[in-house]
Length: 88
Image (tube, rainbow, N blue to C red):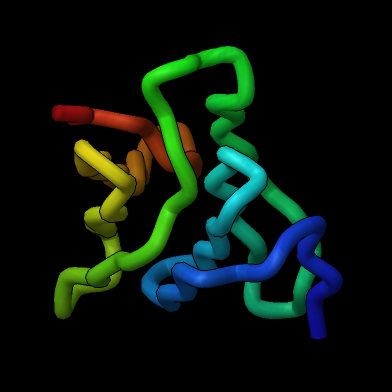
């Protein structure tokens, strides 16, 4: 279905499919496997590989775990895109 550029340690399916791993990128795919959005953290020295994620029951919120922080993405219905709303 999808050829992801790294080993996807973190997979979640909400409104879209999220895949993330040791390439420091969080990538969203649609249900037919097309890449729709990428959050690239390769230039941030504090970011390590992504290892875990959890999707809300509604599918519009995904929390992603990293080495020493986590990120929260929400789906913005008005813009039809994912937004990073929190990283700690």
